[in-house]
Every structure is written in structure tokens, then in C-alpha cells.
Image (cartoon, rainbow, N blue to C red; front, side):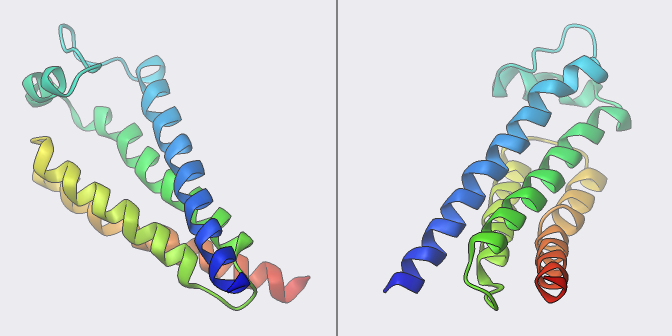
Length: 140
């Protein structure tokens, strides 16, 4: 029972901390790459209405937020999980992937961004996190 509880806590903390990283990067993105003039990025409706004005550079921070949020969340989950358990990192990656899929249906982003985001930001980052954790544990 203690192992299951530890796995559950690892996943939950991974999801929370990964979400914080994700949202932090999304909120900071406007400081580095300003949205197109007149686009309200503070509401879903405003974002939907102005997404057609976005250039490729405007998608950099959303991708980084998704990828780094997943990476950090999977690192946290994998580090807190009992040794030898890769599942928490992958569960975090799958949960973030589900959010990414939902995002594709909610926002009319370009197809190229949807493909890059879904294929590179979630499961590969969970795999990378688990690989880094496994290497660190072998060294320790």
C-alpha cells in the first residue's frame, strides 16, 4: 500500500509542478514575444479570434511551455517514485499529452504546430526525464 501511495503522490506532484512551469512560461511569453496588435491573449475567446494573426515565432513559448512543463513534471514524478519505477514519469507525460490533444480541439492552431507539439512536447519529454533519472540513479 505504501508503494502505491508513493506512486500516486509522485504523479500528483509531477502534474502540479509541471503545470506551474507550463503556466509560468505561458504567462511570461508576452514579455519576450509580444502578441500581434489587438489580440487579447487573456481569454480563450480572444485567443481564438486572433490566432490567425500569429506568426511562427508566437508558437515558440507555447511549445516550450508544453515541453518543459512535461519534462519538469516527469522529472519530479520519476525522482519521487520508488527506484525502478518508470511509470510515474510516463503517466505525467500521458496526462500532459491528453491536455495537448484537448488544446488542439479548443484552439484553431496551425496544423504544423499541432503536429510538432503533440509529437515532440509530451511523450519524448517523459522519456527524456525517465532516461535522465535512470542515469542519475546508476551514478549515485
